[in-house]
Image (spheres, rainbow, N blue to C red):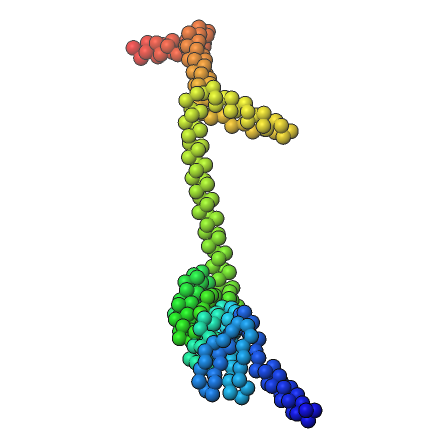
Length: 292
């Protein structure tokens, strides 16, 4: 009996070691694609999986979402501007069997196809579209990559352009363009403001013109505002419709005074006669008498 126990113990130990070597623990987010003698057994897991040593081969597949960063790509846009564009792709394995049977390495294949698709899509767009309408480009990238990844058992969830680098000269040109656009908007806004202000001033003038007393009150209010600043000299303009009657009255008064002065000069008595004037007729008469 003791002689039989030793081989049995050895066999038991070997079986135990073989059993331990045959066990695999598969996590909840993993699957094992098992091949027995080269033939597919299917995905196994999660939990404890028993494999036959030297007969079964397994490939562990992660089902979690993978974030793949596409390296910067040199791209020439449709308007012949050179740009460096990189992107990010998020995908996960939806079918473990296809991800092993259809492609050698689904992550590398997805990355390479994403790079070529990025260059192709960005090359069909101009620079303004690349900078201002990035969502449309992301949608085109997503459709192309997702459609190609379906036969590989890969489900693409997000494709986003991450960063766009353009030459420094183009950046300066865009800055000048943006500055000119801001100046144009400022001038347009200023012109609209002047138009609205002139309209309001016209309405206010028409309202004040209907009531002359309100215009005088407005002048008095302006005087009060000027006096509050402690100015030594105040220039207060008066409109012609206010001082016009006063100027007319002064003109009439000055005209009346001029007419009165002319009439008084006409009615003034004549002065004494000049002796020379009296001698002139006498001389004429004497001259005539001599000739006779």
